Image (cartoon, rainbow, N blue to C red; front, side):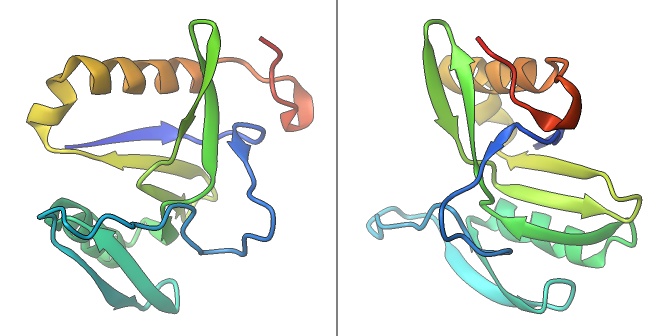
Length: 142
């Protein structure tokens, strides 16, 4: 299962020194049994790194989709309010549609989306994206 959210200017926190199409988060725990790998992306002109077979399948679907212009794995981090604190979230995929619209995609097995903590986090991220932004992408004040 994957979730799509429309990405609006001002919702992402650029990382200093980050270039286009580079991953924000790098995996350091190699003891986890998740299948990791990479493949050459024709749409992006570089290797795409995946963490898990569902992510790999999502990238292959994006690669084959005529509606997707480009995509990148683990793009910029997003900061969103959760109660009285700000939390950090790194989406699995940021995709640019041929229409020019940008969406973020979270790839999770269906059973994981039913877990209380993950469900709460995804609901908070979605609520944050539903906030109306001031003009020119200035982030809202909380």
